[in-house]
Length: 112
Image (tube, rainbow, N blue to C red; front, side):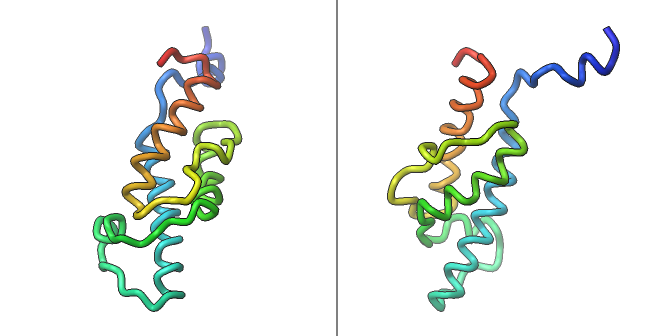
């Protein structure tokens, strides 16, 4: 087989690190915007922001899914986001990544 055939084969491993990094960045920016509008002070480091008890609205979470769609290769349904949102970026990531991975596995025919 030549290299072009290999390039077109589907990836057999869910790109967890890429998905997490993209979501984390988008959610941090959303939380910064939310905090600024509400006059809240956030920690200065990314880890602190992720742990801060700043709600992530479900609509905001749905909007951030678009950055992941290019990584996973398909449009994600809004249903991967929990109705009501999340209490922090870390909690959003902890719930979103497994949901996205499950959709990816189903789409790619990977057994759980």
